[in-house]
Image (cartoon, rainbow over all chains, first blue to last red; front, side, top):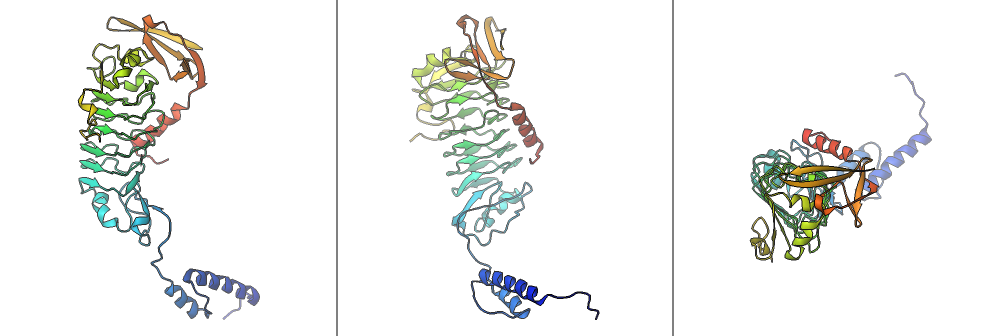
Length: 291
Length: 70
């Protein structure tokens, strides 16, 4: 055999020691190991079931295949991100979703729903996430059969077109933030209840939400309207069939005289009504009782 | 510069106020992308801060519609 390379034995010893140290650290041992059989057996002895601490965001691609090995994570340590979504212990639960054969989902462990998580999931009829606080860009875009959507603890909408074509009433009693424009555009809900916190309605907010007949704003001071184009393509628009804005009774005259609201409410078909005495005094727009 | 335009819906006159330099219009400390009022209100507005890049947001929306990851 031709000797085509000179071996620096000192360097080789150093390199092998580095590799051995790495194996020892991974394997939790300080034992001596001989090269090569000792290395091989030491690597094979490293347990595969190490449970990491902390949380793990799981990614599932748009076509429903997971790209991450989550088998070592205890389910309690997983922050499920549906776009995102799934995880050890959750795998079976989420298989139906991944294959899109499942028509309903209810999971109190989900805390955030990522970008395009349920995009174009046209057979999904019900989605209930009691503890989800955040939804991302286009998360429910194209879920045209989604008649029940419950996100009672949603505080943050990230991105745009999040509920595009969704027919379920959008009821967000804890909503606090959303991006500047187009957060809820294109939904097909007939009623939207933005709860008591939202203090402004930005441009194009409800753009093309063509079925929006009822909007409920529960904040006890006026929610400023950034531009009347927030209602473009809705029944509230100047060429629309009319919609009803429900607000606290003490604010009715304030809304009627406010910039932009005065114009929307000046259109003949629109009306402003007090929450008090209406069905929305005791229930949200999706019929959920207010407790 | 502040720009105003009159428009009519049904029999009612309204005034639209906006900035031609992409700024908010401001009245009583509240900023609006644009302001529309019944004409009889006679409201005036000043220019405020430059509005964020809505073009970028529009691109983002288009990406969502097309299913394009950024």
